[in-house]
Each structure stands twice: as C-alpha cells, then as structure tokens.
Picture 1 (cartoon, helix red, strand yellow):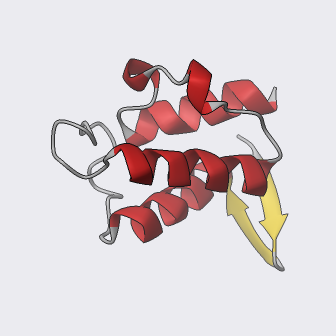
Picture 2 (cartoon, rainbow, N blue to C red):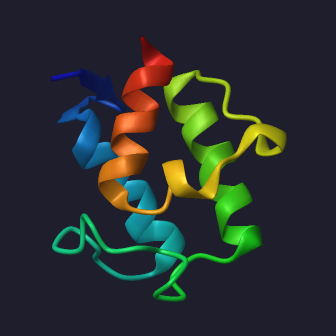
Length: 88
C-alpha cells in the first residue's frame, strides 16, 4: 500500500484518489469503485482532463492525455491501479 502525507494529513493512495474523484464528480463515489465513469455519465472529456491534471500534480506522475486509454481509467479502482503503476 502506498501512503503519502499531503498537507499534514496521512492518507493512503486510494483515499486520496477517491477524494480527487469526489471533488471532480461532485458526489461521493467511494461505494462505486467498480462502476464505469463514462457509461454512467459521471465524467466527460473536460472532467477527464481535469482528473489527469490533478493526478499529475498531486502525485508527480506523467499521464498525457494523448496516451489516455479510456478502458484503463474508467473505474475508480482502475484509476488507483494506473496511478500506482505510474508511481512505480
């Protein structure tokens, strides 16, 4: 498990990503970890770009929009897995 301290708060990676997603989507998605954002209309292209930029900034990763594969990022659990792989 990856644990990071951000602004004096210790949270695991999954919690931090869910917090980012909640902010972008505007609702708590913590009980929808395997639900498809795009099929459910929770993320559109602009929100996806915002998500990638937020993740890059917060976790110091590179997730270029040009290399974005929707099938690798379409659920909260997949976002967590993808960020973990990019962190190394």
